Length: 284
Ligand SMILES: NC(=O)C1=CN([C@@H]2O[C@H](COP(=O)(O)OP(=O)(O)OC[C@H]3O[C@@H](n4cnc5c(N)ncnc54)[C@H](OP(=O)(O)O)[C@@H]3O)[C@@H](O)[C@H]2O)C=CC1
Ligand SMILES: O=C(O)[C@@H]1CCC=N1
Image (cartoon, rainbow, N blue to C red; front, side, top):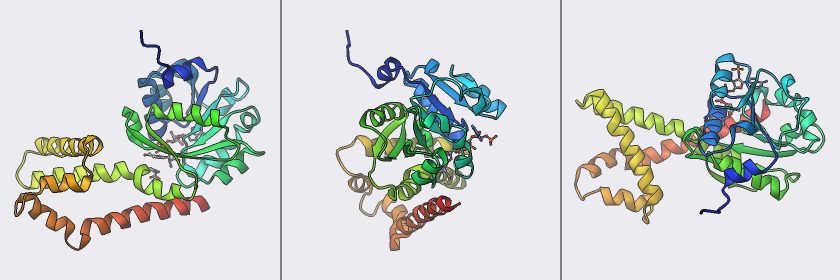
């Protein structure tokens, strides 16, 4: 018999409930990842005002609520995952102030919103973790990067890590200022990759392939290359070289991408633009 205690077992055995506030694109991706990895739905409450999105959340087995009032009188959750837009985060947090003094660890996934802003909105000295997830959490392949304030105890950090790791990989950083670059790389990153897939697929269709076939080639190529980069002993630079025969087809293609560091320069601009926007959101 396998007696290993998994992360989901630990959540199941703990008495703590998980509250998810906002179940749109990011909130639902995390919720689905948790459920798929065996986090018990009967430990999860979701607050989502949109009727359709609330129904979608309910389909996972989680308890759903239309507003904070439906549940702020009850048991304080061990963790409250706040997945509303940065522009409304401070206002929404105010409704949950009561939990902050009753041991709840607040985890905000909002881009830009500073720990300081979250602390002010909650009042006192609440336990706060700022996290930047990404939507591949939907299939348990997300990247979640977190930074905690000094009120967060090791046990709370471990519990948060357990929950978030049901959606993929979890890393903690010490400096909050890194979160802008994190957002520019892994938070927004899936969108860059989806656009690369769109572009590769469109280029294949323009070169004469049936569009459905071209899309399949583009998706499988990105998936296979990412999986190989994750699993191979060689680094991405060597893996690129392995594809590139001297004076072959790849060398011809890459010369368009790499001459004058064309793609690298553009990606640097892309990441900087996203990170700058994250810094701007902090001031809104
Ligand atoms: N999308 C992504 O890939 C990522 C997003 N994030 C962050 O996640 C957060 C959510 O983004 P995203 O999921 O894309 O946005 P969505 O708009 O898809 O989801 C936010 C949801 O919160 C709901 N909401 C609004 N007010 C409340 C409230 N008072 N209580 C509970 N729910 C409420 C919204 O309803 P309504 O629309 O009716 O207002 C909406 O359904 C943002 O802060 C974003 O920065 C972080 C990483 C990646
Ligand atoms: O576009 C945004 O602002 C959010 C944060 C990272 C991904 N989506």
